[in-house]
Amino acid sequence: PEPEMRRADSTESTLKQRKPMKLYKKGDAVLVYSNAAQVWHDDGVIIEVIDEACKRDGFALPAGSMKAQYNNGRRYKWVTPVQAKDFLKKSTRPVPPPPLTGELFKETHNFITEWHVRHFELSKGFLQWWMTADDARTGARPNGVVSLLGLQMRVLETVFSLRTSSTKGVIYSFDATTEEGVAKWTDHLSKHAAYCEEMRAHLAQQKMESEGAIVGNEEAPNAITGAPAARNESLAPQH
Image (cartoon, rainbow, N blue to C red; front, side, top):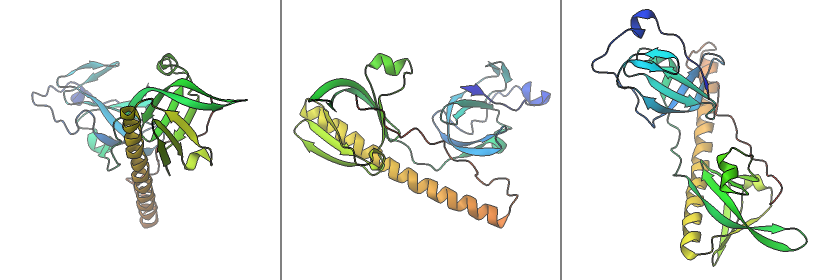
């Protein structure tokens, strides 16, 4: 991720705090203000909080400084306790369910119907798959990406089939090979689909509040003008 940070003044950067002010803790969801874009990003998360004054990523930081990751994980910002009120806000966005990874058989259609093992990752309302786990680890582009918004699913023994708003009528079928496996995957898929609905409602409310703030005060400094960048929901060829 690329760093972004406003340099603290000399008084603050040399401040020794015996009891650091921890406004946010690791894992907290936050809105992060971007100097470069001059917008609030509502996809931030605190990934580190330091207890003592030290140097991190080339910055001299006082105790209690927080590292926030945002913009779909592409950027980060170190924020000192004094700067927090200007650069961080508590986010009310829904908390995503735990991720799930593993191997499933995926049905493919060429001249004949075949089943092939693929590596799958379910995270933040998206189901993605790769040829192998190594492909996923090395950052290769996934063979398929499905947003679970509008999930419809059916189960037959160990096979589950699904379609969503993003699949445009295409039905995907997967075999978990065991009853325990299909129960685990379908349960997680349902929870991630519910998260998508909650996130859609959250973004709609956010947009209404933003538009209301702009109408009420065209120069409102706290109006949220940025939303999380949409992830790629297009589907790669079925492999």
